[in-house]
Every structure is written in structure tokens, then in C-alpha cells.
Amino acid sequence: MSASPASPTSPTPIRNWAGNLTYASPRVHRPTDLDALRALVRDTPRIRALGSGHSFNRVADSDHDLVRLDGLPQEIEVHRQAATGDAPTPTPTTVTVSAGTRYAELAAELHRQGLALANMASLPHISVAGSCATGTHGSGDRLRCLAAAVRGLELLGPDGETVRLGRDTDPEAFPGAVVALGALGVVTRLTLEVEPAFSVSQRVRLDVPLTEVAANVDAVFGSAYSVSLFTDWGGDTGRVWLKHREGEQAGAWDGGRPADTPQHPVPGMPAGPATEQLGAVGPWFERLPHFRPEFAPSAGEELQSEFYLPRAAAAEGFAALRGLGERIAPVLHISEVRTVRADDLWLSPAYGRDSVAFHFTWRRDPEAVAPVLAAVEERLAPLGARPHWGKLSTLPPAGVSASYERAADFAALVKRFDPQGKFRNTFTDTYFPRV
Ligand SMILES: Cc1cc2nc3c(=O)[nH]c(=O)nc-3n(C[C@H](O)[C@H](O)[C@H](O)COP(=O)(O)OP(=O)(O)OC[C@H]3O[C@@H](n4cnc5c(N)ncnc54)[C@H](O)[C@@H]3O)c2cc1C
Image 1 (cartoon, rainbow, N blue to C red):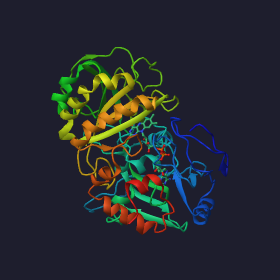
Image 2: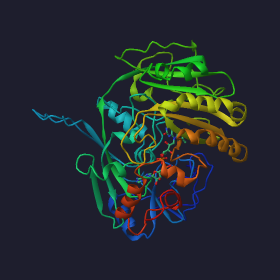
Image 3: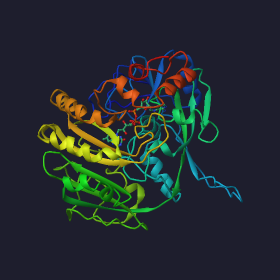
Image 4: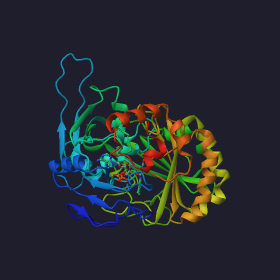
């Protein structure tokens, strides 16, 4: 974000991370303790939470008050797996984390305690609550979005009182409440499933023919724990990043040629900000993201869009985008293709279907990007595209929400949690009109 907030109220306006939008909110609060947050939520007629401001659209914005949670004391509390005796399902080890914590901070502490998250997004700079609220994901055939690790949530409802929800204790509402676009209340804590720390090595393969990837999606994306393809669609090839989990069998696929120098996902940029490659084995959290926490991620001057297709439509997605390659490449920094395992979270773009996600890091030139984005959407919509909730899309909102089987249940859940609409904004009203 461009402005660094003072307490308790930031000077406004402030902008999102990419600087492509200025939040309309007249006040951005930054309370420093939970009681102050509780009173603020209770006494403010319209308010919603802002995470670390990395979304490219107005999902987080409000014409009314916003509140950031990164001024609250940080909590990262591990609950070790209990001795379960004969219990059929062992209790997993979990961590309860304050909502404004960034993945970089959480990952470092988990690793210090010998633990790990199953996956991370391309950057560790984003807040845990903000990432889970939009269904943020990494890549991996067996790996679900980051929100799928959530086992429990604490949020403040419109009266400022705490509501606790658990995957096991509230099976009806819980899958609708994790990816919730900030519409149910202000999440203050999340409990995430964790696993023993593991090591990863990262290698990049260059000059991989796109025809080969499209024809062998299972072999390419199944060849490592986490796999990403980078291309600009203008040429015939891409670069495949393979994140191999130590102790697992490596896949047989080895197309293209191995890179012998470190790469940045965006061609032409220095490799320093990228996580270590060339097969050097290291901790999970220093390899699963593409970018190191101490550097600015990605290209910087950019816009982003992303569309999830059913995995079975991957080859058609490749064909559609290659057909637009001459239009896409001139307005693009880079495009990334990842796989995401299906989950049961109602608003997760991977809800109910194993997915392949086509991501675009556009140049920050909205006028030039708009017609190309429209052409991409025109080609991908018939293949069942669901846009990323935090990135740019012009697909008609009614069609987007209709692609979610539980959209009506989500609208009803919002009404139940927030009958007066304290936490709603134009974005949520557009996609999920009041019922
Ligand atoms: C350089 C870059 C790389 C990215 N890479 C990826 C990637 O690899 N994979 C991917 O899927 N996405 C990626 N994204 C998108 C990003 O992960 C999402 O936009 C994410 O939601 C950003 O989290 P945030 O904390 O900045 O949330 P914000 O943008 O601040 O807010 C997003 C939503 O979360 C809600 N929210 C935030 N905090 C709370 C809370 N405490 N309680 C309730 N609701 C809350 C907000 O109301 C809003 O609806 C990337 C973005 C950038 C800028």
C-alpha cells in the first residue's frame, strides 16, 4: 500500500499495493487492541476489513469505513497433535494466527517450530485473512487453495461480538464462511492445519514447447509437488518451474532444457528477488513462493487477472490463449499457468472441481489491456472460467455468481450473519445482491 497508516486512523486516501486504485473509503482505522476493534465495529454503521491491500479490484474497498488489523498484537499459537488413543481421526496439529499476520511472518515462525503449511502463494507478503477471503492459491495437483487449510475462524459480527466457527463444529455454515470476501464480519483469528516441516528444491526448465504442455498436462503438472508454467503466449514455448518436495518420487517429465542460471518469473528482470533455484535444497517457505519476502514481488508496475477452468479444459484453454498470443504478448509482463485441487469452500474458485488457473500479469496500461482482457474472457468464459476474486475481470457478475452452485446459500449466509449489511460493499452487492 502506498500510505503507511498511523493509529488509530490513517490519512486517506490510500491506494492498493499495485497503485492502480485509490480506496474510496474516507477513513481507514488501525486499532491496536481487540477491545478497540470490537467497539469500532459495534459503533460504526458501515465498516469492512482491509488486508494487506494486494487485490487489484475493489473487493476490499468501501465508500464507508475500512479497518486494518495489522496494528493488533500478533499471535501465532501452535496446538500440537493430541495423543488420540483409539480415536478414528487423529486431531491434526494446528496454528491459530491473528488475521493481519502476513504469510512471511507465519511461515518463519512455523518453520522455527518444525512445522509447515502445505502450500503458499507466489508471494509471502499477503495477509492470512485477506488471502483466505479471496481463495488465494499456489500450484500443485494435490494442493488446494490456502483457505482449505482453515479449520476454524473467529470473527466480529455487526454487534462487535465474537462468532466462532469450526469445520467440525459448524459443518453447515463453515464452508461458506472461509472464502467470504469480507462480507460476514471482521475475521480476527484463523486456525490452520499444519504439517511437519519439509524441504523443497526448485529447478526451472526453459524452452518448453507449449504444444507439449497442452498435450501432457498430467505429466507436466504432476512432475513435482508444485509446478508453474510461465509464458507470454506470443511464442511457441514457456518456462516450467518445478518445486520438488524432498523425499517424494520426481516425475519422469523433463521437457525443454534445464536453466543453468537463476530466473525471475518476469523475463528480463534480475533474479535476486526470486526464491533460490538450481536444485538447492531448502526450507519449504523459501522455495514454494516465487518471491522472497525482503524484496518487492513481481513486476511492480502491473495489473493482474486470473481465470480458473475445470482441469479437463486445460488443453482448450491453451488453444484459446495461443490463438490470442499476438494480442496478449504486447500488453503482458508474463502469464502463469498453475493447477489447484478441488475444495468444498462455497466461493472458492476451485469449488467442486480440480482446476487449471490461467494468470496474467499485465502491463499497467488499463486502456491497452481492456480489449485484450475482454478477448481473453470471451474465449475462456465458454470453458467455464471463474475469475479470481482479487484480480481484474469484466465478466458479467451474474454469470460469475451463477457458476458457483452455492451462491444462493452464500447470499443467505451473509443475510444471517449481517442482516443490516454493515460489512457489504459495492463489490459484494454486485455479485451477491441482497436477499
Ligand atoms: C504481486 C502479487 C502476487 C499475487 N500472487 C497471487 C498468487 O500467487 N495466488 C493468488 O491466488 N493470488 C495472488 N495474488 C492476489 C492476492 O493473493 C489476493 O488479492 C489476496 O486477497 C490479497 O490479500 P490481502 O491481504 O492483500 O487482501 P486485501 O486485498 O486487502 O483484501 C481482500 C479481501 O479480503 C478481505 N479481508 C481482508 N482482511 C480481512 C479480515 N480480517 N476479515 C474479513 N475479511 C478480510 C477484504 O475485505 C477483501 O474482501 C497476488 C497479488 C499480488 C499483488
